[in-house]
Image (cartoon, rainbow, N blue to C red; front, side, top):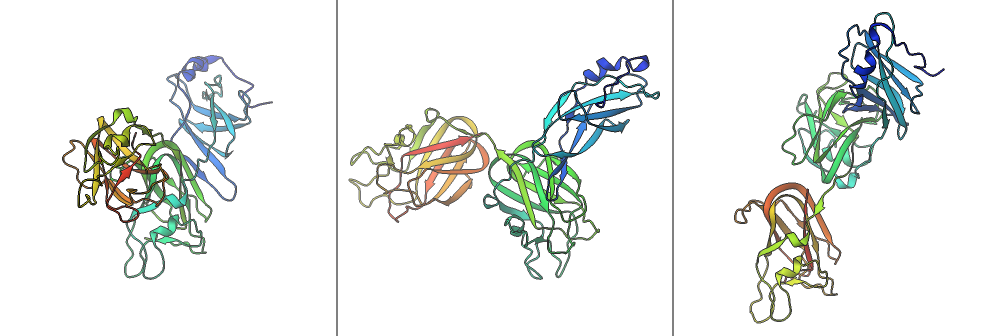
Length: 415
């Protein structure tokens, strides 16, 4: 007989049928998962208390098919309950009942179907350490970058030689891309030591690495050297922060063999070229060829913007720049640069700056700077985001050291 086949509908408990149906059962943010070699997930469920009188407690039923439950958890008078030993990728069905002091039990609530998902790991090669409050660099190689080097034999360890800063400790990791972050993994040190193993923690997701808000998950890791995994309701961001609040033995140190971030690429939008307009360009060739700045936003890959090279000496040198209007204030999170596609390479940008401005006059510091690969493939650069009405793409050098700058297309990415 399946759990729940016998349902009592008499007495003071009878009106629970309506009450429970009105209060939806949900999986709350913070599915805490503690993993060894095989992942076993724990789902924490939450529901609203029934307004019916005479309630003594609640039960949570779980099964692999709708209406057929093989596991029951007595939650007592709490309105949350943890259901453990669930498997990654498996779809589960949950329902609750209420019961009174005499053991009378209500009908099942509305059923919740939920597939347990352990998320997708963002590649280590894409992550960078933005900041860390402490790292040991004298007594051992305890550099923070060891936490994202994909090698379990190295560790990040807070300072212990000379001084031992106390908790809380934190590490901020830049994702270098926009993600819907839905979890993380913490692998304690695997070298036989225990110093620095985190007990209590908080985890944050941020769009700019400055404003963090409330943590997306807080909790306490299980003891042991097995990998710990924590899942939560997804939040879009560009940075994450793991804050250690205590160590398993009460020590002042924090350590980690690896910290992984789980998430899926967030939706970003390439602004249609029809919404862009050229405000200014440092130079454009209009005599020797059609190298008008407008060609960089015409949606055609076989036309180019090219800085001036005919009828002028000396030829205008770097830096070169183009300023675009976005048509409206937007949250800019990246850009695309497509070098010329006509077989030539003159003017292909090497070093660059990219700016976002609200007025097209005050630019401040570049939101991103870098060096592009020496090829004709499209380059896409993402950053944490800045709101503005104008953008400026500034070339600082050319791949062969020449004075020209060219572009087949320049795109702006927004969210």
